[in-house]
Length: 131
Image 1 (spheres, rainbow, N blue to C red):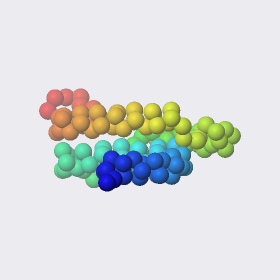
Image 2: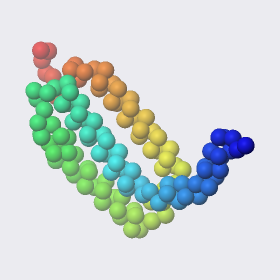
Image 3: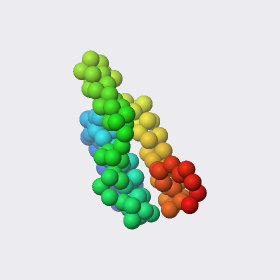
């Protein structure tokens, strides 16, 4: 009879090419946008869980942040698209991008665990006096 392992190996080997094609079609820009969405959503979720009295639309970092933050966001977006237009080979998904993605995911996990561990003791507000 056919073992489960041999069926599994056949499925993997027949889908290797399509999986490779699918991964290579993902743009670094879409990974950046996805990771940014996760980051800002986790920030807002944390605020909603641990500081529900203070949470509002203004708690969403993209909306209520400094001008410098918005300028940096615009400059980084412009930089990406200029590189994409002038040096398109830099923007093809390569193993180094996946390594960077792994670091981003690891960093997000560490940051989220730290925030949830700190709970109500953590805030983005600078405290000038102890409460």
